[in-house]
Amino acid sequence: MKYKRVLLKLSGEVLAGGKGHGIDFETALSLANEIKECVNLGYEISIVVGGGNFWRGKSNEYMDRATSDYIGMLGTVMNALALGDAFKQLDVPVRVQTGVEMRQIAEFYIKDRAIRHLEKGRVVIFGCGTGSPFFSTDTAAALRAAEINADVLIKATKVDGVYDKDPKKHEDAKKYDKITYIDVLNKKLNVMDSTAISLCMEENIPIIVFNILKKGNLKEVLKNQSIATIIEK
Image (tube, rainbow, N blue to C red):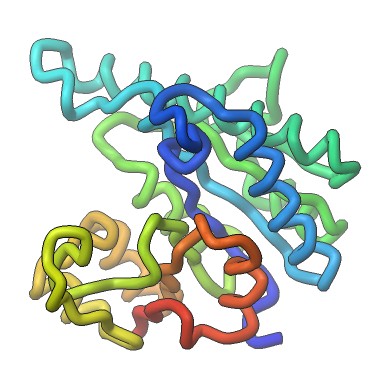
């Protein structure tokens, strides 16, 4: 087992499934089942969820940015709770932690408590991003990965890795099997925002980018990174 403690970054759009907006619970159940298989193999799985299926802060140019970002955080909490419920239906022990205190519905994020949950075989879902505006959920994923001493950050996408240009628009797009953090930044490949990439580079946390839409890919990518792109030094 090359990577035992895993931080999985899920976008809100993935949870929307074919609907494109909101939560498709069948998709949430399917994702939870894929993650359950990995937990059963002994992996410690934590998840940072985005909120783009409900709200995108930067797109609301007429609203105060901080207020818009806080609304986005609430979207991530809805996704975290829905995904948490999917795990419960599959009898997977799970805890939802949020970066903004919401005692009635979730635990407040405490690093040591999150680590303890993982050591006990529980899935931990992080909502509210970093808990502060002006930071993306990609940055939150890198931050939580560093805090819990994750072995790897895995970014779930709709494509099977990192390309030199959009493979949906360009037939000659080249996929990278491996690439360095610096090259990702210099080539502006938009895998994650620059703050997230820089933090992973500083803490030497490898990033794996893979296609979450293909069934069984998460388990496969943990065993064999050749079906994805790995970003490291």
